[in-house]
Amino acid sequence: MARLVFGMMQSLDGYVAGPPGGPELPPPGPALHQHFNDHVRGLAGCLYGRRLYEMMRYWDEDRPEWDAVARDYAEAWRARPKWVVSGSLTSVGPNATLVSHDVEAFVRRLKAEVEGTSTWRDRSWRAA
Image 1 (cartoon, helix red, strand yellow):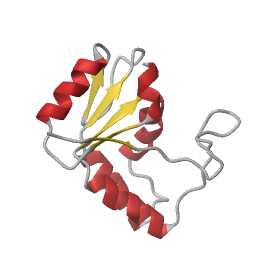
Image 2 (tube, helix red, strand yellow):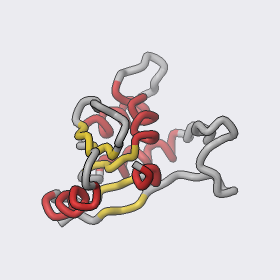
Image 3 (cartoon, one colour):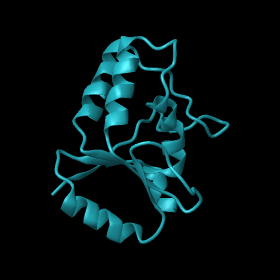
Image 4 (cartoon, helix red, strand yellow):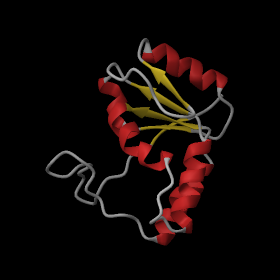
């Protein structure tokens, strides 16, 4: 049985978004980025709400400006299954499953069926 672990980045002042509502945290340095790489690689999968999933889709396609650490993160992220809770999306990207009904039952089944260290979710799926 998988553990469902809540994960969320925020700044020291407790905010998770900037004034326009988007992510406003600075990009991580190489050591912190490597920490995230290792963290994601250890996950059984990621349970996202629509907003965070849409931001994370950034990692679906290679970008020429990425360094080796960013490419490593993209590889780790793409390899993980993703479950996206949304009442408004009609499709999701590679290695992702859309969850639009009976979220509680889905999460209970996911926890029972998934083998691995943990799954991770963001705060936005609660509103879906």
